[in-house]
Length: 312
Length: 86
Image (cartoon, rainbow over all chains, first blue to last red; front, side, top):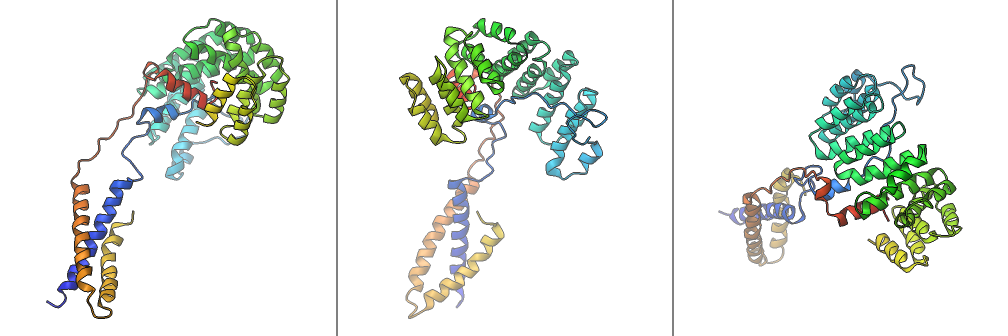
């Protein structure tokens, strides 16, 4: 058959190309690997805790934040990719008035992670009004991760009202326990310093837990006022003072790194800890400058630790 | 990676091009060309069969770690990265 060689040629090319396609897929790997969201410890650990409490929904008369009131119909009419986000916002909007209704809205969310976050947000919103309902909602969440986030959120939401209760919530925050203590104690310190100092002074837990507590005080107060934060950190325990000033450096650098560096340099003690905090904060946005700050630190141990983190 | 219809259609175009190239001059290139492509086809078909026949990787269920399950050194790095620790 005169066309046989050509036919063989076509067949060879076809098989070659098919083999190349699937072979590449095997070696390079498909873009959508079969690992569910949060499927590895690293993925779980990579989830940043929510540092702020839930936003309060706008007042019924439309005053307050000025954002428009959402309705279920409006959300359902939206495109699929934003519908879930809209429903989550709608649930948060009505959570204080009608938590059960808000939870019903959450059940309409298709994305599993967003649905669980929605339930946690409802609990966070209702916590200042009815703690029991909030706790019930959190305890009903099957996901360990989102149950922990839920209690974390309740802690943040009640920090100003009842510091002892808020800090107690952190014991239920699962993987976020120390993050919770850090942020809740920081929120408490902003409202009234004495309970925060007293809590950290108990020195509960291991080294990370104890030192993180003081870091929270320094960081949160520094976001408001550097001098106020420095006065608080001086009251920290001996083992907590350095990291408290690190927190000051980080917190203040979020607003103005240059001014913070100058203020750190003026400190009679713990200037290097403070500057280290600035360098650490700069890692995400200006790592080159962060490294330069680390290299300028006088204390060898702090300099080494600083550089190890910046270069990691 | 290239859509399957495109992959299926391209052999005709590539074969026609190769046939023309192989036919240029005295046509002596056709046999070595066919031999090389045949060899590549064997390799390609083997890879194709392997990918199709290999077992599916197990789906990793969402791991939800409790506080006590996370190594403290990992926890420390996590906190450092997020600005909670020095």
